[in-house]
Amino acid sequence: MTLAELPLGEIRRRLRSDLGLRLGIGPFAVALRTTVRDIPAALCTLYADFPVVDEAAFVDFHLELDRPRGLRRWLAPQVSFSLDGRVPFKPLPLAHAPALQEWALNWCIYTHAHQYLIIHAAVVARGPHALILSGPPGSGKSTLTAGLIHDGWRLLSDELALVLRDGSTRIQPLARPVGLKNDAIGLIQARSPGAAFGPLARDTLKGTIAHLRPPSESVTRAHEMARAAWVVFPRFAPDSDTRLEGVPRAQAFLELARNSFNYDLLGVRGFDCLADLIEGSSTHSLVYGNLDQALRELAALPKSEPEHVQRATAASAAAPG
Image (tube, rainbow, N blue to C red; front, side, top):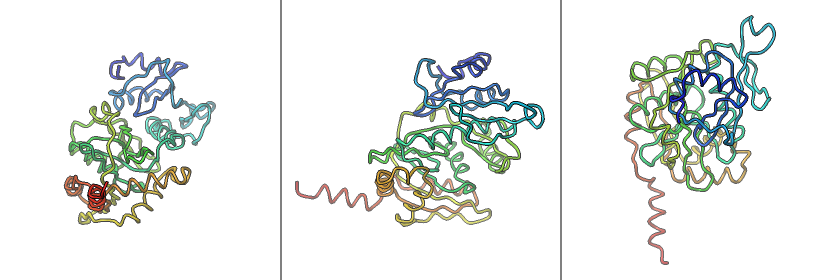
């Protein structure tokens, strides 16, 4: 059963219950409890295709969003997030509750799911090949992701690249809503008129934010992994020419290590995992000021393995048994 098959009244009831509303999100089971009025409608828009998890099943994360008690419940109302009774963030304005839910789940995953090497990156796939877009906030990776998935790429993740630590360089899908900011919201709405967005969160630290509903196919194929084939470091620069250039692998390794949430924690296992990923990928930088031009450059990335990997494979095959 998917969330879309549950009546809105039942969704509200489960959100208010002790067990919470339980959803399967990528490899995780999440239970959410809240009485905040705006959350049910946002969930119906953004998570309609996600499976509802049986109430007897194991849950990875128990999230709760609620309004603080006291004057703040009525004067400049706020919302707070807690995980198993722990409150890691300061409360935010009540109008930011749907966005806080997304940020809270990100935090839960990157602080706990150390069975993966976790990189701050968006990931999309074309066939069995994964494209990793890594960069700091404001680099334009989510805008590129939104454009790519509406051009036929499969969404694996918008914020967190979950890399398996088995040497395979496979990426675990975590198809969730894509967070867009400011001008990017209108840009994607104009480019993809049928795209469904959650509510706007205005006046956040990052400006205005809205989340884009992930494609249904990406959600239903959350069990299908893809191997890293390309690593791209984007940078949005208004009015600039679009330039896709190669990046030395050593530099790409350092950039991804800096953008990883748990590289240091994993130690040598993190090093080996990241080294395997870089070894099997072609690495690039992308400067762009025009989304359509950038998407054309990314669509033209070769599907074959990097030349140095092909040479190593050929040499191994030619070696005497």
